[in-house]
Length: 209
Image 1: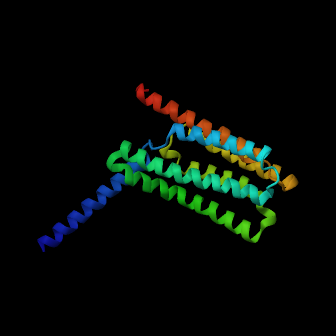
Image 2 (image 1 turned 60 degrees about the vertical axis):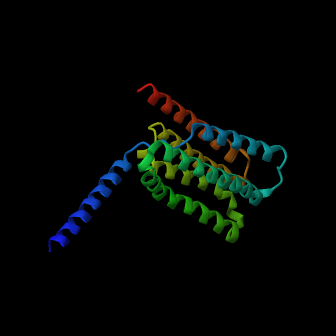
Image 3 (image 1 turned 60 degrees about the horizontal axis):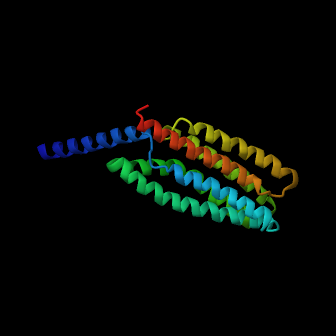
């Protein structure tokens, strides 16, 4: 009987520890984001937009979406590896819990982004012009979901992508033709701003502000 009670006590203690860790992670600033990589993504967005403007102007809406889908998949893959590596160095034992928490917040929006792209490109090609605006809206919502773990200035970036998503949807609806600026400008400004906010946040922590 005493052994059963002891096992229950251990289980309860483990459950409480897990709960405390989850609560701690829910409001802990995530430090695994790289200022340099976000600045690079902003520069990459500009480069791709210029490439589309001068060398690939006639790819059509489907080609446009294909190019930007490839760019986003590549940057998400590389940034994931960078984030995991940095999180393990900075957060130590909490890294896995924090990464899992962020994944739970991001996954629904990333899955929606992938599925919307697949469905529209395969079953409603005429509406492909909707995708850049929808991508930006989903990115904004993803950021809003993770705000408790991000620097306070990130709320402006989320707002930026929400506004640009709406603007791009309205602009694209006029002609149903996608232009390079519809992805280039939002991501250039947005990712450079993210990089600057992260760099300022890092510098502030170094000064103990």
